[in-house]
Length: 279
Image 1 (cartoon, rainbow, N blue to C red):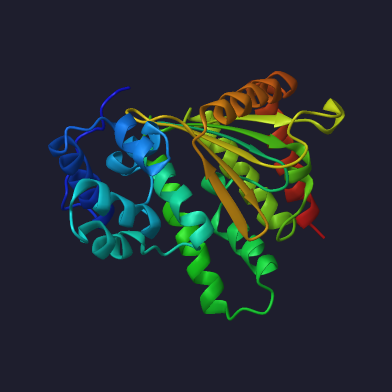
Image 2: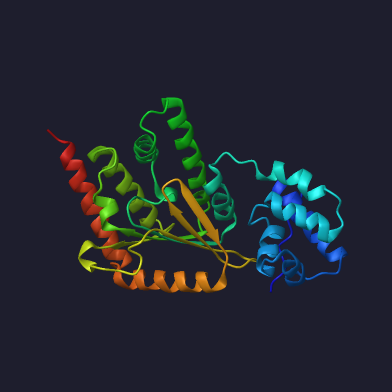
């Protein structure tokens, strides 16, 4: 297994914990796999903690202090490392997303967060929280837009999205919002920043009908899969699960329109929405 990449310990509490964990493990002359066995987790899980890909939870901090003889260092510091602006079920996935070199996502019912516009994000967040104050909705939108800064780099990470046609025809926020949202996706695709494919409604049944899939690959850590539901989410590092979901994603790509035809459909739908704005 490839070793964890070097991190700047001053960059974040999570990076500090990862660097300290690597130091303590090597001092104890344990491999990632050996330490993982003592904690009843995989060696790849230890590697993800060291690389900063995954957050350290209190139960693991306690076990690490015990196995590595670090008194209560990890227990004291994991609380600071776990602080996040995002909901608990999503925070670890966002942190992993920021470290990924490749992100592949299937979106069955809405435009993926990384490809959303502020107006579309506002419409979605408002539906999620219909009674929330406007300030709270604006905060959620700002957090979502912060994630899209990953696309400011002209080449990395690779972002490949398969979007169900149903998500594009669900007019969140109305025709004007949808026209802008689809033009934004088309612009990202035309400048080669993302790969987008549309899974057409006439494709019929497909292997991901039960929900969304997000696959994340890393330079020096095993892949992760993120499953999300209403108000809940789960990050999975099991190799068999990752392999199965990757195969599922390949099947979706095969059933979807080509990137060129997908772009044509997205732009045509944007025009249709724009015409709906007219009296």
